[in-house]
Image (cartoon, rainbow, N blue to C red; front, side, top):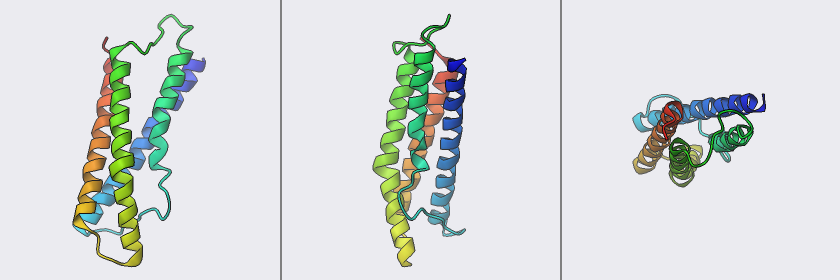
Length: 145
């Protein structure tokens, strides 16, 4: 029962995180093309950091599975690959996307022109984050090793 609840929380965290990231990607594309109205966060983007709940809920699923007939372990290749892909996604988010977003928000608030290099950095960083999460999702669906 606990494993099921943690698994549900894991799925919800992933879905909410992806929705936030896709929204950020649409905003970055609007900034790149100059079309659409930009809605950038004025403070820290805590919504984007919801992806950090994905491994936490995953660890809870892993722990809750230990007393079951089909336990999950850290030694399984799909767990290791999903964790590595999470670190890639989190690193790109924290080191490239969010700093670029803060720069864009500051320039937008001042009414300044948005720098193309900053917009590209945010777009490319979001591509890395979304691809890493998609690959981690595939690893979890296939569950090899």
